Length: 125
Image (cartoon, rainbow, N blue to C red; front, side):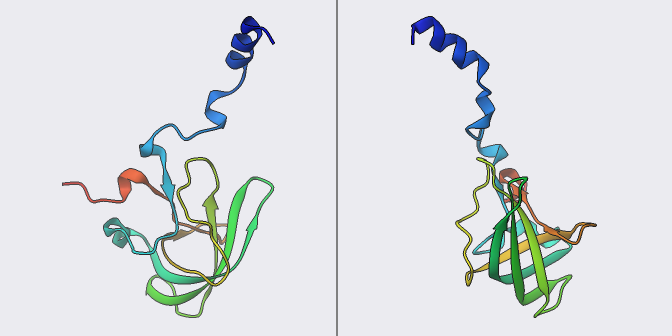
């Protein structure tokens, strides 16, 4: 391939398809410790992961059981958690048996959504 061909090819490829463009775009759904800003969310719980699946739209759906209900749910309740799998997702490798905190709300389709952007993790002064 010539230098000219490489330049043309690099201009044609979508740049944003491969990397997150900055810390402010990073997202988090599963936490070992709740961030201070979680208290404003409608549903807060410690969950135990039962299974993990990926949809055709590249969304992770985690089936979980509520271990500790903090707000808006009950201990023992089942929960389906939708989370991002893009290059901006900073969630750990979610596996069955692991426990995490989540904070968010239940969407009309019955899926829990609790994504935090990086800037939402710490309270503003």
